Amino acid sequence: MEQFLTNAEILQPQRPIIEFRGVSKTYPGGTHALEDVNIKIHNGEFVFIVGSSGAGKSTFMKLIMREEKTNTGEIKVNGFNLTDMKRKDVPLLRRTMGIVFQDFRLIPTMNVFDNVAFAMYVVGASGRDIRREVSKALSKVGLGHKARSMPSQLSGGEQQRVGLARALVNSPDLIIADEPTGNVDPNMSYEIVSLLTEINKKGTTILMVTHDHNLVRDFQHRVIMLDGGKIVADNAGGDLQ
Amino acid sequence: MKLGSVKYLVGEGIKNTWVNRLMTLASVGVLVACMVIIGLAILITENVNVAIGNLEQQNVVMAYMKDYNWALYSDDNTSEDQASSSETASSENEDGENSADEDEADKNGIKETDYIIHSDEEAQALCDEIAKLPNVAEVIFVSSEEGLQTVKDSMLAGQDEYFDFLNEEYGNPMSCAAKIKMKDMALFDETLEQISALEGIDIIQSQSDLAEKITAIKNGIGVAGVWIIAILMVIALVIVSNTIRVTMYNRKLEISIMKAVGATDTFVRIPFVVEGMLIGLISAVIAEGLLYFCYRVATETIISTLSTTDIVKYGDVALWLFLVFAVIGLFAGVLGSVIMIGKYLRREGSEFAAI
Image 1 (cartoon, rainbow over the protein chains, first blue to last red):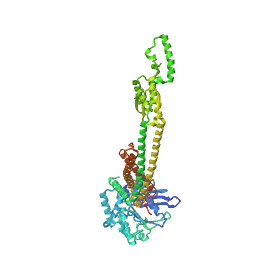
Image 2: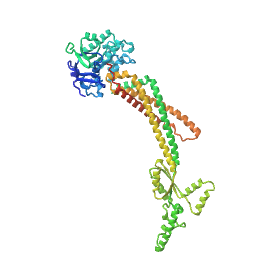
Image 3: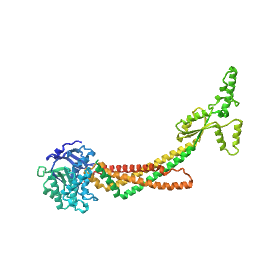
């Protein structure tokens, strides 16, 4: 597998962590999800992905996670070339990113600690590392005191913060958040995006899909707008183009 | 993979088996039924083989030899003898110095050159030659006297007098013989040909029909056993696969999270394989116990009603049967889970992104 950049290069600001070159995706049946998308997202950026339903947001994110393959064009994420990536290498790519789901996706039979630790078991971390890192991640999201609680005992906002702790626990370079505020109240939405902003300030790149225009307006990050499978706006240079 | 991960995954597999205990129980039940039927098929086959083995032991071939008695009662020989004796006589008349030892006919007109086996030592040597044939299990030399006695013993009272008469008037009508037991009845005809080809063998008395029947029964039981085992193995595989599939759908959320955080397919697969193996092994242990109990009851009944002791003891096959069950259980468990989880991961396992 070709690695385009060294880890040191990836972590440098202004180096692209995600790069799309002439990417098009058509699903079997003829649906054109993305058409000739060219974009660069740099290391350390916070990017909102916005657009109406069917705009191509899902496909855009799935391509980054190598859930889908492109028909044409080239994608590089975290130094991995996704275009000709083998199936067995996909887990390596995913270990460099954390994913936050709209529906939290916590395992109801596991307590908060185990839900977060689960992500570390998967990558073969030692018991000592797991205890240390899970505690750190829970403290970061303000849930250190709820480690033994079950998901059903938490509010929606707290559950999403557990999801965020799980995404953070393996210290990824990139966090992909799929409408993380979609199932929480407005106050909690602000809290979650604030948390993500804090994480971003420490150097982690954040890619967040949202429909909440208030959040986009208030947090003043880069916004990429998709419509009909094309990027119709991108304020990479400052204002929305 | 690190030891910690292996421990975690094995623990997950064991936990899953307990969490899905109803499905586990159903699978174990069906697997035990399959294994018990397979075990019964094996035990029946073994018992039939023992019975057939006994039959085979009784299926003795008698190879009669061309000895003096054979020459005495052989029609062809007699005419040849006569011709031969007259030739010899004229030859003696001509040169008058032929060896009397070799060519001189006895009172019955038989010369030493008319037959091949001249003594018990030569007969024993022929028996040794027969014993060297690959499919021959045992050869016993039967002298002509023993042969005559055996025939007389098999006659009804009074009928044996005829043989006494023959013996006294003309000589023993029985040639010496080799009593042969074969190893494999399937090679019966081939072995008979090899024995017939040996010099000194006259005729072979055998029950080729019985040999054919024994071979047919053995083959039939073998084929039926293989089919029964194959069909039940497929059933076992389907049952375990189904349980694993249910477990997998129950754990869809966990699988999607595992995939999202970078779990390899092997990592996702291991707990299911462990679960499948556990189901297989638990079933093997239960099936062994159940079969032991059933077989004991059945054999006690058979022994008391049929007064036979030619029955395979469970203890003789217990370990072997357990190994068969364990292999079936592990095969069904591992293969069932690998097939199911592989299918799932290829089709749906990566659908973690709900965007």
